[in-house]
Image (cartoon, rainbow, N blue to C red; front, side, top):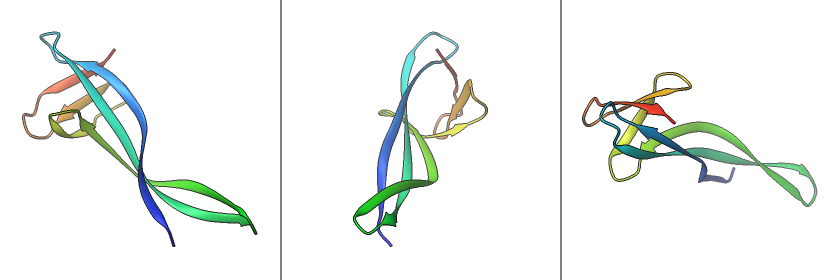
Length: 76
């Protein structure tokens, strides 16, 4: 079984003071053969991190929290 970690999205967000953050969404993907010469990549686990600020937890579709600081961010 072949796996990889792939960046799948970048999300812009701000804290309550207006400071902007880039949240990077990455996925652990697994290779699945669907035919003799065709492979597709299937997302397994999703990870979020704020660029230069470490891991982030997704609260809902619009809100995130930075693990290291507890700072809440809102998608823009």
